[in-house]
Image 1 (cartoon, rainbow, N blue to C red):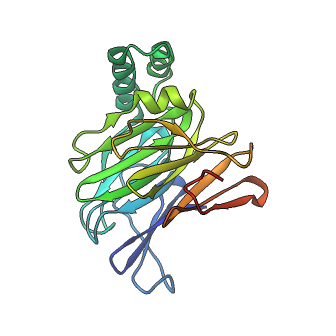
Image 2: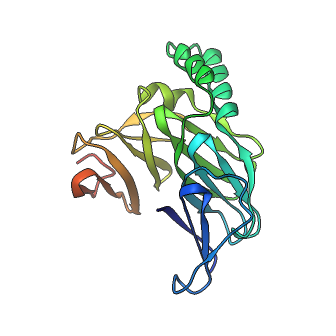
Length: 227
């Protein structure tokens, strides 16, 4: 199974189960499996800021970085660090849900990242199970957790995200739709037309938004999700 695909310049990069990463130089007519991958967990999504620099995310909180267009990869972050960083951020923010963060630390690295979006320059946002949300502005040297996203989602899974104007919009389980800034602040619910799971969202410009999910459900909005 291949679960995500991204474009690094003229190269396509696809990621999937058991750490499989495939690249294509001819728009998908042929594919080559990348062997320089440091994990064997399922990878769920991939994105690039330019033809060389990008990230892939997956199970056990794995975040992989590439600096050569997807040819080789290094493990930059993992679920152990993610759980500890989130717990500390929740405590610092005085969140009523800090005890959930403590439980995540005790659980270990069992929470997957499910989506990532590259935002240009050295920035990216990764989201996942149980309200995981992390952002970087320095090429991934530092990943900052978002207590506001964790609290706002009430620990529901977040499956996908997309840019919509100067904000990001997110989709998740049980009709979860919301928007935040690129720094994962200012949580705002978006009107949900469906109470089932959304697996992805697409910001199409001019306030247009598509949200899609279970059982072939797909919805289009022309006013940034107001209707």
